[in-house]
Structure formats: structure tokens, C-alpha cells
Amino acid sequence: MGDNFAYLLPLTMVMFGCAFLVVWRWGARPALSWAIGFLCGAGGFSLSMLSGHVPDAVIAIASDMIFSVSFFFYGQALVDRLGGPVFLRSRLAICGLSLLLSLWSVLYLRDLHAELALNDFCCGLMALLPLIAMRKHLHRAIDKALFAVTALVVADSLGRASTVLLTAPADIDGFASSEYAFVMQLTASVLAVLFALTALAAVGLDVVARYRQEASTDPLSALLNRRGFEDAVAGFRVGDPAAGSVVTCDIDRFKRINDRFGHAVGDRVIMALAQTIRAALPPGGIAARFGGEEFVIYLPAMGAAEAKLFADEVRTGFSEQDWGSAGIDGVLTASFGLSGTQVTDFSIHDAIARADEALYDAKRAGRNRVSVKLALISPESGHAGRAETKRITPQAG
Image (cartoon, one colour):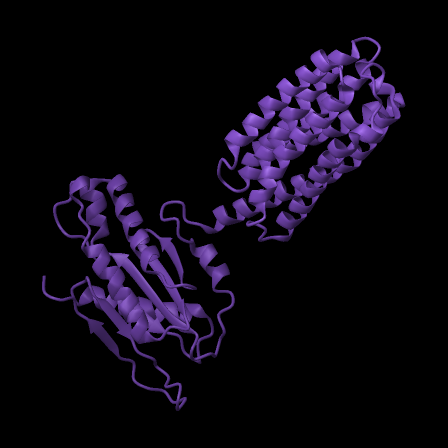
């Protein structure tokens, strides 16, 4: 095996390992495991350059140990994308068993075939277990690509393990300079580059998606912010009379809460209302915090009658919460305004403006209620009608 080729694969893997470390600093959690995996892989392949200076048996044991750790972290990077410790104990056990089997086959058996087969099999198995878990999470094209490339890596490892008796030399000494070692590094070079590029693309896309989500999400309420709401309602169909309903709401006398109990308690109140909205939100509903204690909810394809039920469910759920732990011994309430979209709306903001008018009506009428701004245009006739507001007054008590 030529010296240039011997240097090429470790150098390539070091470069990818460093690239993953940079991405990890950007906040991508799986990138650290990828970095450790590729840096360990670089160390494992670079040991072959010590042949002639260090006994081949020592190189074999050391490289087996490093490759086992490398594949453990490849698997860890894959399961990090799933968000849980998938097969963690099993993979740790396989990693430890691989190290023991390497010592046994090299020092006791002095059998190169056993050493290669057992290490390749254990490495392939450590990558196979996360692959099994991944098959249920292939939602995006990059996930499918990563799954396919990982499957190639697993197939290569298990394939070598099953054919090593026919393809590998019989003696440990001189293995590093054998044709088998050359072919193994050549195959590993191609797969390592493909594996690293796919993993790097997956991690990079995850970082972009996370930044995009953070840019569109309100950190306090975990609902959309104004920008996220604008993006979410971009498909609002102007002129469609059945487009849906808009609900606006804010917390009654919120300034008094902040002034008397402090902003920390005020934040808890905002989070509580957001959680109540999120729990009642129907599939397809879009909820956002526009600022302060003001929330806007868009309910696609939902008529005013259903939207009123939704708003009253949120209103009741919020008013029934116990605030004793926050030092508040009274009842906290919120007011709601509601409007359906109209065929003459230029944008969703026309409906939001009407819902805001209804919200002000609810405040003036005593708070803790839902007010509805009826359509100014009759969808059936297309003629202008009289603006009218209806209020749903809460039950006594």
C-alpha cells in the first residue's frame, strides 16, 4: 500500500471530524458524536503506518479498540437524531465484548481471521442497532439518504466479517502491507467520504431548521411569534368565504399583575394561557403570541359557532386555574374577540382587525367574555350589511 494512500484516509477523516466539531459549536448535539467517531476512525487507520516499527499484533489490538469506539459513536450520533438512548446498553456491551474478543483472538489464538471477523461483526452490529430504530423516523429525504448510506457501511462491515476467511491473509504479521488491507482501506475511503458528507448535510440541515424554528417561535410561550404566524398563514386564500375564523385574546388587568406580583409571576401567567390555548387548539389551528399578553389564533375552515366554542373553552380553562402557589388568591381571566374571514378581505390582518374590535368590546363590557364581530358582507348576497357585535357572557360565578 502506497504511503500517499495510507495518509489520505486518516487525513480525510480528521478533516471531517474537525468540520463536525465546528458544527457542534453551533449547537448541533449529534455533531460531537460524529466528530469523535471520525477522529477515532482516523486514528485507527493511521496505525497501519506504524507497521515495521511496532509489532503488528499491537497494531491489530489497538486498531480494533479504536474502531470499536468509533462505531459506537457513529451509532450514538444516529440515535441522537432520535432524541433518546436507543439500544445504549446493548451497544456498550457489544463495544466491550469487541475489545475482549480482539485481545483473545490476537494474544491467545493468534488467528488473524478470527480477529478481523469478530471486530468487523461487532462494529457492524453497533451501527445496525441504531439503523433498526431509524427506520421509523425517515420523514425527510436527508434521513432516508443517511439511512441508506449507513446501511452500506453496515453491509460492508458484516460482508467482510462473513468473507474474511477467504479474502484475508492467514498471518497477523505483515497484514498492514497485504492486498487485503489495501482493498479494505480503499473501500473504507469511499464509504467514509460518502458517510461523512451525508451526515454533515443532515447535521447542517438540522442546524438550519433549528435556527428557523427559533426565529419563528416565542421563547416564553412556545407558540409562534408574529413572524412565525405570518409564515404559517401565508396560504390564506383571499376571497374564500370558508377560509376560517380568527380569535384574539389578552389577559385582563395584566399590568396590575406585573406591578403587584412582579414580572416573573407575569411570565407564569402568560405561559399558563399559552398552555391552555395549545391544549384546546384543534388540528390545523395556528396560535401565536403577538407581544405582551396578546395572542392571536387562526382556525382554518372553522365557522364562527365552532370558533366561539373554542374561545370559551380557553376562557373557562384559564379562569379556573389555581394561582395560590404564585401568591395570587384571586381569579385571573382573559377576554376574547372573534371574527370570521370575509370574501372582501385583502389579507388575514383584516380579520384580525375585526377580532381586535370585538376584543375591545369584550373589555368594555366587563372582561372575561367572548365578543364576536359578525360579517360586514353577506357571503350569499355580496351586499354590505350592518356591523354587529355579539357577546357571550360568562355564567354567574
